Image (cartoon, rainbow, N blue to C red):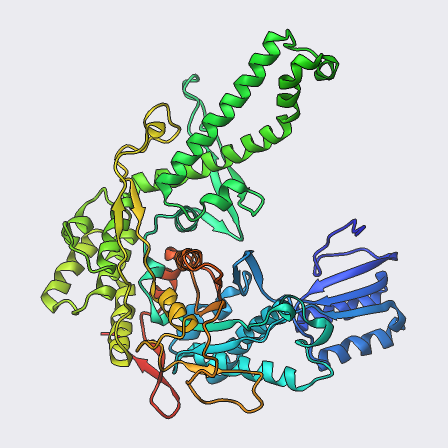
Amino acid sequence: MGITLHLLLHSDRDPIPDVPAIYFLMPTEENIDRICQDLRSQLYESYFLNFISAISRSKLEDIASAALAANAVSQVTKVFDQYLNFITLEDDMFILCHQNKELISYHAINRADIQDTDMEAIMDTIVDSLFCFFVTLGAVPIIRCPRGNAAEMVAVKLDKKLRENLRDARNSLFTGDSMTAGQFSFQRPLLVLADRNMDMATPLHHTWTYQALIHDVLDFHLNRVMMEEGGGTDPSHAGARPKKKTKKTYDLTAADKFWQKHKGSPFPEVAESVQEELDAYRAQEDEVKRLKSIMGLDGEDEGAISMLSDNTAKLTSAVSSLPELLEKKRLIDLHTNVATAVLDHIKSRKLDVYFEYEEKLMSKSTIDKSLLDIIGDPDAGTPEDKMRLFLIYYITAQQVPSESDLEQYRKALLDADCDLSPLNYIKQWKAFTKMASGPANYGNSGVKPMGLFSRVMNTGSQFVMEGVKNLGLKQHNLPVTRIVDNLMEMKSQPETDDYRYFDPKMLRGSESSIPRNKNPFQEAIVFVVGGGNYIEYQNLVDYAKSKPGRKVVYGCSELFNAAQFMKQVRIHTSTVHLLHDCGVCVCVCVVAPC
C-alpha cells in the first residue's frame, strides 16, 4: 500500500505537508478533537478518515466545522465507517475489546452500586461491537437469550439496532453490495447470548489442553506469550553476578501448523508431539550433514552444489529444503520453550491432580481423596489453586455444606494462606441461582488415564514428565455447549424452553419464546456477556467437530483466565448485585453477604 510510517494519534507529530494520511481510530471525543487540531495545523496533504465504529452526526459536524475554519474541506478526501469494533483471535473466536476492558467486565456489569445510566452505557458498548461483527459477517442473525439478565438486555438492544438498520432500505448495511459472507448463505446464523452467571465453575477450572493451559499459567494475550528466560548464575565463575532475566515474546498464529494442530490437545500429547518433531528435525539435519560429508563439501560454498551431477539430486533436494527446515526449527524451539514453562507450573503446583479432582467434582464422579487433604498439602499448588478447587466444590455441590463442614474448610483454607473473600460472593451467587433456577449441569465430564507415556517420552526427552499423570479428556459438553446444542437442534429442554426469540427481519417485534424456524441451524455464534475463556471455546470447537457441517463461533465481552476472574470476584466483598426477572420487569437485587 506504500505506507511508510506508523504513528499514534496522540503522539507529537511533525507536519508532512505533501503526504496523504490515513487515520484508523475510534470516534471518541478525544480523538475527534485531535483530528480537528491536525486540520487546523495543516499537518498533511489529504486526510482519509477510517472510524472503527460508526461516527455520530454531531461528531461528523465537529470535523466539518474544523475543516471549514481551517480552509481544509477539500483535503478531507474520504470518511469511512469500517464497523471493525471487535478483535478476531481465531477463525472461530472473537472478543470485544482489549484496552479499557474493565469498562465492560464481569465486575462492571455486576457491581452493587451500578446506576441505570452506567448499565445502559455498558450494554450500548457491547451492542455496538456485536452490530459491527454482524455487519462484517454480512448476515442478520436469529437471536436467542435467557430471560432476566444482562444477556436479555443485550438481545433487546441488538434486535432494535438491527431492525432500525434494515428498515432504512437505502442505507441498510445488510442489503446489496454491502453483503459479503452472508449473501450466499441460504440459512441465517443463530446468535446465542449467554450470561456469565449461568456457569461460574468453568472459569475457575484448572484445565489440561495446551492453549487453555498457556492462558492459565503464562502471560498470554492477543495470541502472544510473554515469558522470562535466563536468570541464575554462571556456575563456572565463583561469586559471579546473577544473569539478568530477559523477556521473550512468542506469537502463536494460524501460520504455525503445530499450534493449529495441537492447541486443543491434552498437554501430555503436546509434549510427545514436540519431542517427535524435534527428533524428526534432528534426523533431517543429520542427513544433510552426512550427504555433504560424503561429497566432500564440508565448509565449501553452497553454490557448488548446483554444479554436481545427477547422482547428487538427494543432496540438492535436502539443501533446497533448508529454509523450510530452519523455520521448522524455530517453531520447535518456540513450542519447546513454551511447553517447558507450562510443564514447570504443572509439576510445581500439581496441576494434574487439581484437573483430575475438579473433573470428578463437576461430573459427580466418585472421589478417591479428601478435599481437605489437597487443601492441607503444602506441596499441592498455590493458595489461589486451593481456593479455586474449593469454590468449584462449593458451586457443584448438590447440597450446600453444613456450617460445621464449612467452618472446617474455612480453617484449612486460612491455614493455607487463602483469601476467603471470593467465597462470600459465590455463596450469595449460589443461593440466588438456586432461587432463580437449578444449578448448572456439567454433563458426563471426567478424565481417562492414558497409561504410561510412550517410549518417546521416556528416552532422551526434552520433557521430564516424571510424577505427572498422563490424563486424556472424555468428550463432554459444558453448560454453554449444551445450551447451544439444544438451540441449534431445536430440542425441547427445560433449561432452554423459556429462552426468548428475536428475529430482526420480522416487521413487528416478537415477544414470543416460540421459534418460528423449525429447521436445525448449521451456523451459530455464541456470545458470553460478562467474559469467557479458552475452556469453553475448546469445548465448542470439539462439539462442532463431532457434528459434520456445523460451524460454531465463540465470542465474549472479555477473555480472562482464572486468576483475572478471581480478582474480579474478590472485589465483590461488600455487596452483591445480580439481575433477575420478577415476572414483570427486570429488577436489581442487592444482597449483603453473610
